[in-house]
Length: 235
Image 1: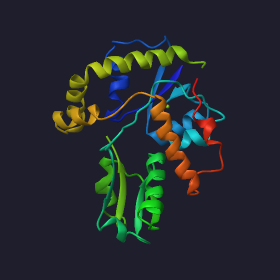
Image 2: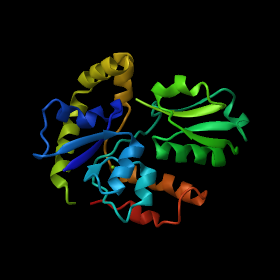
Image 3: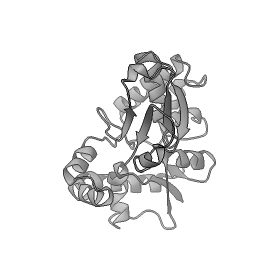
């Protein structure tokens, strides 16, 4: 079995127990680490059996994939690891160059929706590798702003292992925050606040919020013509 994982610290509460040998996945399981966009492509291509997937890519391939229950990485409030850095007020970005992270397609879709519906601007978008560690390399590219990200039935045994690992992780956020601080150089307190502000469930409320987001994207022409109700079905 091949399970995709993102290497960002926001995934630590899901994978931390597996990494530490506290929870064992089925024998022969291989963890494949990549960016969200890389894992999206591998999952759709059949190269992964279970993986997180960007919401925007799930809806595009809902007929090919099965959403497993009660496991997600979400946030009801400021997420802190997705940000638009701009040299000028956002309302002044009309027809200005905005670099988009190639690693997170859902964040890109959200930014496009905000530009169109909330800020009433039409920037010139350009793709770039724009994770937190890439900011220095981006300084030589002409731009006015950059979207930065940083530090989702046949596979139920792997799914149960991930749920068990998540349970351990949520009970050991202090330990995970200390490890994340060592990995990133960010203070333990900030890492702890960040991890504590995220949500790792997939309840009716989560699905309703995702459905509302997808509906807004479709209404604004930012999604193909799909049946949104189909995308909310879970195994």
